Length: 239
Image (cartoon, rainbow, N blue to C red; front, top):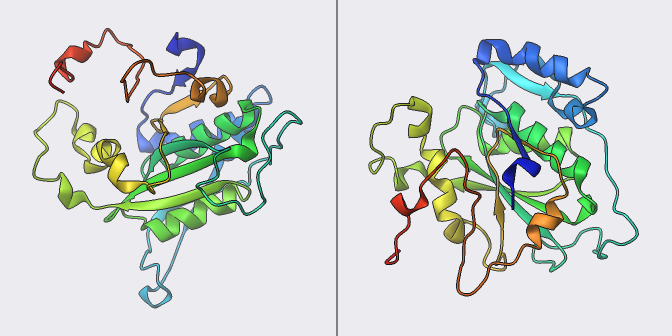
């Protein structure tokens, strides 16, 4: 499958330029799913007594995104179905304050192009020591995408912090980048299949088609080959 038909990858941006970029996209009528990344910078003063323990300038408040509805051909699910519902398409993404705009835009693009958006369940993995704690991130996502089915998991960075070697790009040394390796341990046991997506992509096709792609023989993982990556550097016959 050609990954170019599925994903548009956004360039990494300097955080000082991100607000103008996000607002511009939000006002673009040719980009209906971008309304979810329109943001307003604000100052939060949150005392530790209320459970958040977070007070920082530049926290994000997003415009509420449009709600998308299932088509008639979609599998039925209950309004408050558990995440183990077999009709769900499961998507896992990391969630942190630095790339929150990208995550919101990615989720909105998935829903915009999905034939059955109400049958998508999002699993967000947040770092234990992110400047915005998981509870605050949960509040921001739910206020922006109130109809979204989601669960937030906490990733303990001490699992990998001492295993990471230095990289050419400092951003790649973020322990949260390695959370995808531990999805089998992090997610609920009833989730037997999941699509992992980076937070800097926009989907331009129905996620269910990708979900229905079969992995042949004994293969348990699939990934698109792009940027001339040689996957034999990472996976061998022994692993």
